[in-house]
Image (cartoon, rainbow, N blue to C red):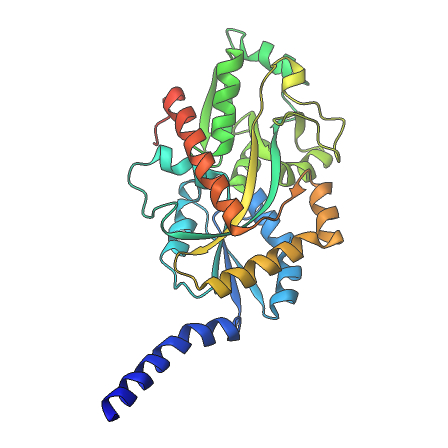
Length: 321
């Protein structure tokens, strides 16, 4: 009887640890690692929902920007973090592009993460420095085809959505633009403003404030329709490049093996935060459509996009630097 009793005690002592951890969650601050530099779209989404998420979790939410290598630096940090729900990853669609670009990532994009929810979706916006003579997409195409033209375009890393948007633009228009990689959306925006490069396919929130301030000129959005908050900016498709369509998403994930109860709690609070009217209004004002999904729906989206971008990267013969 003593032996049975001891085994029972040991089993009961082991099992509740996960249960109690989930029941007590969260009992301390939660860190959101944004796999991007400050000033970009991913950083914007994280910060705009930060207060709402903190209120729902009942704990501080600390944003930790870890840009570099197109987002793989911050992503690796979360892949190797404890699976306890206290370290969350926020990424752009680049996350689904990397498996097709890098043969040896320091993590497995599917196996090492537990999807929580989509956060938002947005087209990119093609912006140029105001000193550039091109005032429309058609004029940029014409300028790019002149013999003396030397156009460069920024992107937050090789294989980023901005990079692929530029390559697709080149392929569909015949314009020769040289890609210049930066360590995030913020540095890329700064480079265009400073005149280091002439153009950038930027996330909407990162660019619109600079456009409204007159430091950048918006030529067109990359989606299939105009953005409701900025109806004066035409789509690239309607501006001389029919069929052009590039749209990205933002999402949140936790390390793999995070307890299911913790995932459910995070999903519930993230979706609730995104439903708050002030959050939806602020995102919409920046050209972003608020999201929110089940973990299963987000997982399916990731797998589908990995397959889609693998085909595009292979056809465009894009190689990491």
